Length: 349
Image (tube, rainbow, N blue to C red; front, side, top):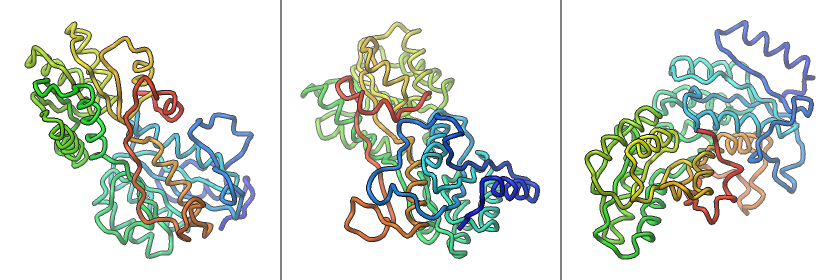
């Protein structure tokens, strides 16, 4: 474990950058870095909050080309900064699988104490993650799973199926027994398992109250694709009672299309939990009445788990003496009544 002074750390990291063509940013806790930690970041309480041996954690995630993805990295950095015993080596976000593999190989060569990895492609990153584990470096897999259980010490997941279930149950409650209600859905990228899981959960929940999806289109998690898909949907469906949009980032475009079409006869539910959507829910002056959380704090949770594992600690609220192998986060519904509870952990689309 590193016991180097901050200056020596900077020297070591500078050498690392010179040795490999990666853009790595080292972040160590220090109050002199400014007080910009998010409200979601905290050191917890009890024995686990007390500083222990310094741990060096390598972090790698895809490029921040989406509000949720950008929040993943910023929350992880903020969380590491909240601990005085964590030194974070933050690799530049990339959607290039080969570059991300090189980043992890650098972490292995540098003998970090743990790696937190949100892979651009879980299958493609499985081999290098397995090599890290075989080198004795615990890997915390975030959001997109590897192909092998041997590639990670612990995995932090959102609940895509649960998102669909939460959205469907909310609509069932709103419909209050009206089985003739027209339900529409704007999905994300249809080829992705996460989109398929969300749609499956939505369909299963609707079946419980006698509803089904009457009109469905797919976007691509971008503002532009959301506006395009929503415009097509609104043109094809002259009347809608309920609409679930899978993603709040593409929802910016969806809301633009709804405004352009002058439509306001339905109730809309969002997905992921962005701050701008929560503000609209709170204002209660649009069709958007709820959203479903897909936590952007998964990277921060990965940092916390990596610290505990590297220091040989467990989760203080569990009787188990080891950090669990898999942790799946919940997908609660956010409405005007409970939006204050989730606003601090929301991200900007």
